[in-house]
Picture (tube, helix red, strand yellow):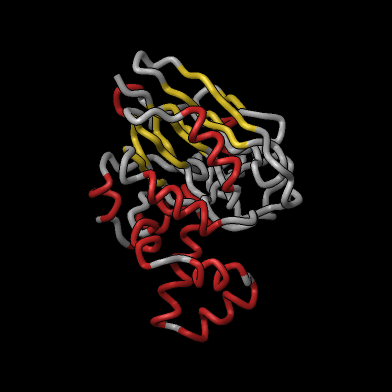
Length: 253
């Protein structure tokens, strides 16, 4: 029987991913990445190429992180809005640097990323960021998510970046606007869409457990280790981490 292996934010740390994958993953396992394969670390393109190659022989799902989403917008703007693309690259030089290293096959693989992944048999929902407290509906299928438009699409896209939510309304707080009373979203999440496994927020002290959510970004690029959640066929959960080099200092992202 197959396990589900959910791997936290890699952020270009190829050596750590290679080690974790080699130690942990079996050919029959289903592997889900929570997003942010790229940026900050030393080997983003190599990470993408490795995961793409592994997808030929393994069942791999890539949940899109905010960094993959930024690269996707950059590639689109390079074609449709060159001035906007230039401005993006001026602010974030890694956009062009990494894009120049990716092959067409790499880009096609990144374009297969999904906004979320459900493990129905274990009531687990994998997202990159989080669930705003005022989100009252969530797509049941990827097809439903792709059909969203207008305000519903914009609100749904907040799962990429949600960290803190307003203490009264539950709406997502933009980065840096949260007050002392505004909680981290998972602290008050009630499990309405299942048990949420997420990345995005680096927990340097290790995997962080909430009543209805688990944070598995342990800050690989910051020296906190690269972590995976192992969901066994019977639903039991375990974790494995490999040590990582410190390549960057923690900062809001």
